[in-house]
Amino acid sequence: MASSSDMASSSGVGRRRDVPSPDARMPPLALAAGVLGLVGALPTTFLAVVAVALGGLSAAAGPDPWTYLLLAAPLLQVLGATWLLARRSWLLLVLAVVPVALLTAAVIWAASTTEEAGGLGWPLLLLVVPVLAAVLAATPRVRHWVATRPRRAR
Image 1 (cartoon, rainbow, N blue to C red):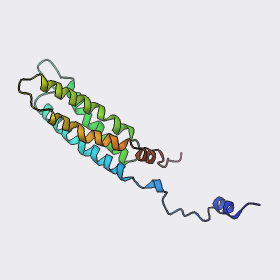
Image 2 (image 1 turned 30 degrees about the vertical axis):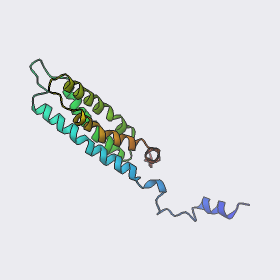
Image 3 (image 1 turned 90 degrees about the vertical axis):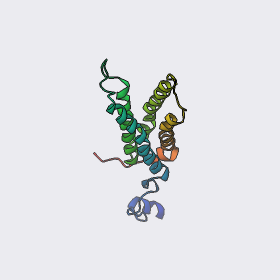
């Protein structure tokens, strides 16, 4: 004979359907990663707008390929942060740091070839917030929250 706990769990009695599961709430780390991902795209967006406004897409010898990276980096980062906040993917936000890192390396390299190169602090500020967002998005709690999202029934 089945025990009363088996009957309660099989009939749905004893379980409250109106109470969300513990994983249904967004972890604070996911919220922080998403917000930092959105905020971290602002300096790169500003740099891209300035470069395009100064004629970066139409140089004398044709379009410069690095300006496309300038435009793609903040878009990927905003998309990654949006997907994390929508509980779709944590990996896109983590991988969105790669174009920002390449862009920062290019800015540092270009600054080091000029005679009036300033400190490396300003270009490295391009990396601080996006890397922090990627680290927070890659935490086990955030990955588990995204992985356990409810799937649509087909």
